Length: 270
Image (tube, rainbow, N blue to C red; front, side, top):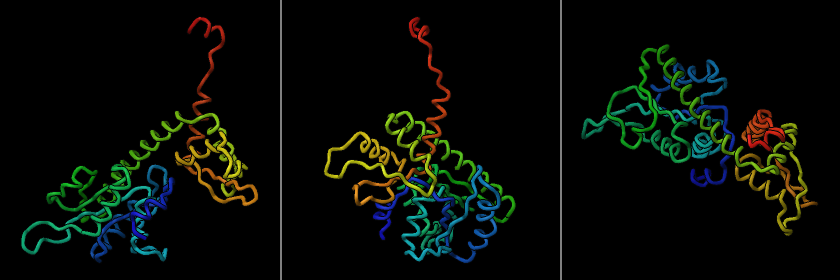
């Protein structure tokens, strides 16, 4: 599947517990991946998360490599790209960086936030203008232990920033929730993870109801997803996703922190 078609048709609101690693498949980069990149990602939890280092040449999905790339870029927790110089121009002394990795970086910057993309390199050559403003880190890979620590620290910084961005998104979404939307989310949140709720909505040819409108808004906000259809009632089963559960938790926290004023305070205008 072409990456553009994939991103438009297969985008999921939740991310996979992995770091998508874009780097040269040249054998000399294998040591870097196995002895620095993978240990930096997998040896310990990063900001409380257990992540794996995912490189498409290690994929066993059976899909085309373009689909694997698109899926990894769209749904990984963060994208890590090694843009180290791999060669010099034949007719000039201009540093050459891996074209395939640049392709993946372009896809990542087109579909993800800049804070979700981290560029690394082992050189101090002039950086490409188009990516010079993206967060990047120069790493000395000749010192393995230092390289692991530098990469881990930089990844943690990126993950903390993406968490803050996610928190801001949740805060904005909570402020826009209607009572009907919140009630629907709470119903779905109370169900076990392997179950979905059939809301027995009006048939498809009948006017839209407040419940259906609420569900449609929740879907557009990326809080829930439909999982099956009830043929007899022509209604859908819905399941809450991790973002929706985070919304419920934040809404509950805000409700618990809110203490209504008594009538005397209201009358005094306090």
